[in-house]
Length: 247
Image 1 (cartoon, rainbow, N blue to C red):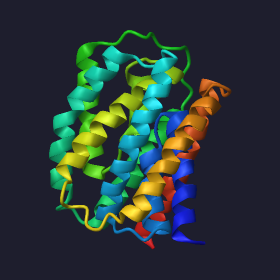
Image 2: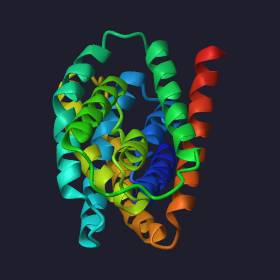
Image 3: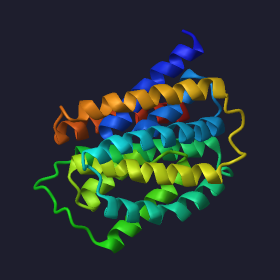
Image 4: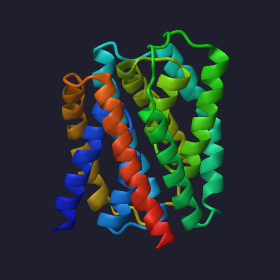
């Protein structure tokens, strides 16, 4: 299969994930770029952030039109993560690739397990500013360190820690992803190696188109089903990454 077809297919799947689930795109993009398109780990992280920034901004617009974004909570959450994302992104270049891969897989698995836990009664929508800021700072640091947009962590945090409904968390996470990705990408400027724009551009284009389809898909699926799909995808990716490190 040609590189272009692989890039278009992977981009469409990742855009679908971002549009429907509000996250999971970058946690899928990095392995796709490495294992399907032969990017180095450094190049895959930088390329992923470019793709995810463009795609999440597009998906954010679609969700905002439907009123599914908690702007106040999301803005505080995102702003709190900018500096940690920048600093962690600068430090991550000095960490061995195997350690980054293992950390990536572990965090993804933990986030998935949290999403699979029964949630009980729906939590209240109002959240404490200090809690939002603290959670956002932690997410920003992880985002910068692992080179991902952070949606696979933002959605569980927005639902389980900050008390948003699933659909509102999906839309709000796209705001967080866009801001954190830009901060992490800035920190990684000049360290991404060969980005191969002939692959990145069609990948990003397919992801943007897929995000619109993902938004329509999300309107037809219950919040609980979205959580389970999201968690299963994360567990599968985490297992793949851990096997690659251990074998």
